[in-house]
Length: 257
Image (cartoon, rainbow, N blue to C red):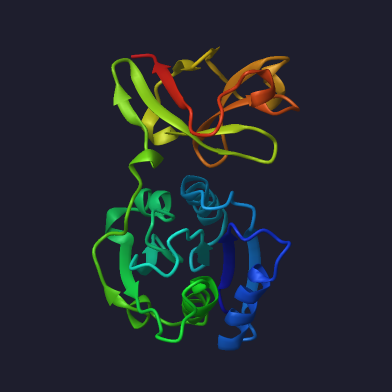
């Protein structure tokens, strides 16, 4: 059975753009399975897009192909790439969308190629004319090297990664999910098994980490989410409604030891 193509975009569902990706995939091979990972990435938000790509990559089996299109630079000289990150493939603009997927795959299992942009590709719709067809070829069984020329590692985003500070690490809110949880760039690998003492942001602070949302009670708490990122969350309501950090705000995490 061919691999699935999972779509991650900021297209929304009110226009025909998301469906056009499926049409482009089926033009290559109408038997391919297409899955809407999400079309709800905030418009042009590369950090939230990178988080969604990582979440999809964790959930699907090796061999899955992610077609990721959050592309504010569409039509500019930015590269189009396809990567193999530990057996999960992703076709995307080279603007940081694959930052987490690439960074967290074993170094020996990572490969990247530059994909050619056809001369007749629309300068405003590379999702349909570049990324979807290449994703379809990979899902149908093409080798990565058949889809482009080997190249150095893709662009990564400094803002996607936490930085070490005395006594802990500092990150920022990279996404706010449907439930209002403020998801930060501080990952389980950044904590390295150390206990979280507190997480703070301008005008707010929480102590320790809750294991579940139900443990939070009536206030806010830090929670280590399912994709391995530290969140500031409330139980049953958006964290921002109780003074939680908002998109882009710096969150400093104090750790023990």
